[in-house]
Amino acid sequence: MVDSKRYISKTELETHKKPDDLWISIQGKIYDVTQWSHHHPGGPLPLLNLAGQDATDAFIAFHPAIAWQYLDKFFTGYYLEGYLVSDISKDYRKLAVEFSKMGLFDKKGHGTCILLTIIALLFFTCVYGVLCCDKTWVHLCCGGLMGFLWIQSGWIGHDSGHYTVMSDKNLNRLAQLLTGNCLAGISMGWWKWIHNAHHIACNSLDFDPDLQHMPFFTVSSKFFNSITSAFYGRKLNFDSLTRLLVSYQHWTFYPVMCVARINLFAQSIILLLSKRKVPNKRQEIFGILVFWTWYPLLVSFLPNWYERVMFVVVSFAVTGIQHVQFCLNHFSSSVYVGPPNGNDWFEKQTDGTLNILCSSWMDWFYGGLQFQVEHHLFPRLPRCHLRTISPFVKELCKKHNLAYNCASFWKANAMTIETLKSAALQARVLTNDVPKNLVWEAVNTHG
Image (cartoon, helix red, strand yellow):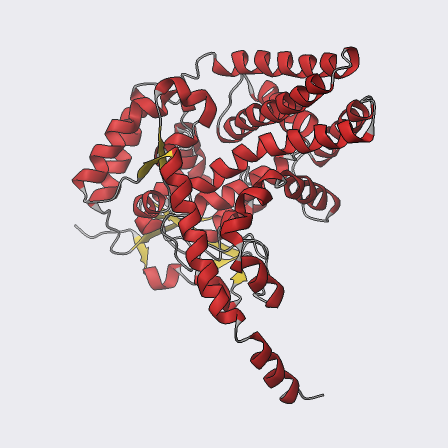
């Protein structure tokens, strides 16, 4: 029987990976998502990063079953020539189907409601402590509680960006704005923009923005070549200042983490003031304005500048714990250069992540990040089920001889510092050559 299907080769598919010509393959069928990329809930960047290749595993990871019915409107009529599925991908897709049949993607539990209640209690406790108590130690404790509040609100913001934590999308959006923009001063629009790119290109030095922290940190000597960030669209210059800062990054890591929240504030404001399209931009701006109204106002009620400064420092420093947690999951893991490859989705996600070993009673502390491997493979899965699926993921890694990376909290810290130290020592070697290079450049400069 003659096959009436029309096929295109992988080579031809790879030519369709521009913003104005964007094709992807899902289960061997070719889809033109050029126009859809402008309306894609996750933004155009994830589609661009996976354009011109098979994106089946990524599609499964990020989309509910209902999304499949909308694909036909983008079908080009072409099929991918020689389309094959690896054994790892077959098992990964089977596992996703099993979890779906078990209803794990839909059972969210009551954790969000409980956490929102705790956040509200923390907030009103801080306000009461500042306004109604005159003890300095109480005010400092309130600063610590504020930092803890920001950590917990961050977990809700993270969860609500991956799946609907409330009963409907409108309430989910409200939870995002309250916990992210209004309470924490972080734009959820900025967070989703940067976080989607991170998940798609996990630990790609030039495509994953969560590894691009110059001039303060580099996790690989490959940054010394001033690579171009595909996310920011600019060159990450490894200049003399960056060399100096990186040379001591294993010493400055924790101090910088204590004030890392300033960067999140700045990045949120920069995005919202830019011309970049941000969904619900007015809501985002309003939420940020709410934060920058109540937080400075609360701090102003403290009796003197010493307590005001200490309140801010303590709240930032406590929140620094969360910033350290973010780094532990990826800084010491495998990295690569180049765009993500849809054909090794499972391998890239497991290689680029590190789980943190902890008892179940400590799950509240990590917010799901302790099961980073599981979260990256199944980002839509509510975090209350990550411990449940962990044995299945571990068994699948074992079956295909893939590393299932995990370490204790303290070991993960040591691994992160060792990674930073290794890059720092290499940067110091380069630093010794700076005077020579500057002279050479001065002599050989024309114009």
